Image (cartoon, rainbow over all chains, first blue to last red; front, side, top):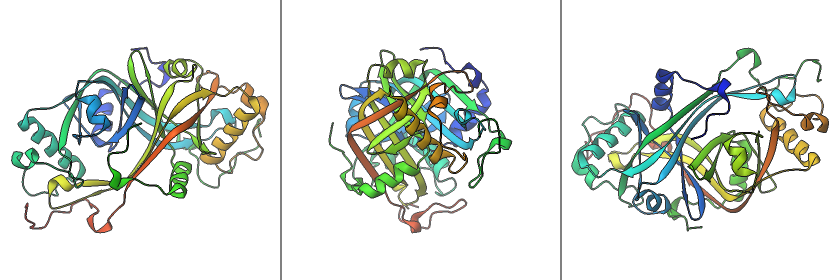
Length: 183
Length: 183
């Protein structure tokens, strides 16, 4: 893996990275096959240093991942646009995490049930009064009728970047640049 | 390109797709090299049926794209989580667009200036009182000191999916499932 170019933006705060991955709702899973790269948005959980998500058993994504495919999983939050009198210095306040590793389907029913329970805990916290039954996971089908496969991405490399928000530079709708040197 | 599996969720409303791509702030650019897939979040504009974005002239992304690399560009907005008494039917209301094609750097200074002007129009509308000068674009450098390259992705294939929000099913924090058949 190449060294991250933007050293200045690197984030090494593991607690912050964990918190970010636990809270964010959508991750972008990058795969590749003979047709080229393929990026699909998925809901996910971050647990024990691994990314878990689920998908249909049919389709291009499932086909690629059935054999333990190399993947990149990227999560990014844009917090604000930051202005600058120099147009080239207009920038974005954001946090992003990229994880690289192989994706494997999970066979074990107990593990799959645990993952699906954690998905419910994250996305609809407190909604279900009873824990998820493994029998439900076993016959788990989406509204589209497809069986569901649970995947695990175990990252070999994780990189995080952050461009913190400078409140003074936050762009607010209707705002105009002052009479700076480039105005 | 394989046919989209979830026919039921396909969106063919070009006006809606255009509007979505014009408004969304972050796209996820998927590339691939010998190290595997690589997904990077970028700001972008959608203009004339093409995606434009910029990036530093150094780094892994730039290296891959210098030769007209195959790419996938994915934009997704999660609008809400939708509950269901059946845990497996918990779902997400979203809209997503995937574009597949090759990415090329743009050489022409006039075209690059036009793209950067449209980027400013989108991200900091009305902020700058004067149009962007091509001389500024020519020497355009980010705060990190890197020269900027403008890229164009001309899609061969575009697919859009939508799972519309059903307000009655929208998950609200603190909400609990009723005494349905799976409760």
